[in-house]
Amino acid sequence: MSNKNKNKQGIVYSTDPDFEYVEQYYEQETLPNNQQKLRVELDKKQRNGKKVTLITRFVGSQEDLITLSKVLKNKCGVGGTVKDGYILIQGDFRDKVTDILIGAGYKVSR
Image (tube, rainbow, N blue to C red; front, top):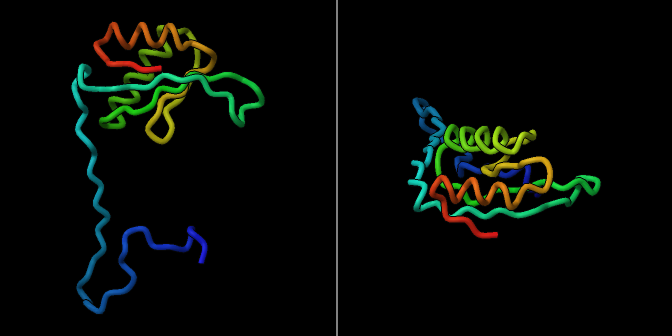
């Protein structure tokens, strides 16, 4: 059986006629900046040789991640996106992003 056919919630069948499946989604609380341990790295895999700066290991809500990405994109003057819990900034801006994050109180590793 392929992975796409597996039920991720674990509910296969219920004999209860009143059963209603409710998808539970718990959004994680955002840690304070001084407790975040972000990783800044350069990536060019599957991007036709173009370099991007990845910021990973953010713990918090999606809205806070989007807000942080807007600040970084604005200060670097480039585009980017938020995907799967990480921030992608177009170009090699590791030094600048690291300085911005440290200035905002984050712990950063490269």
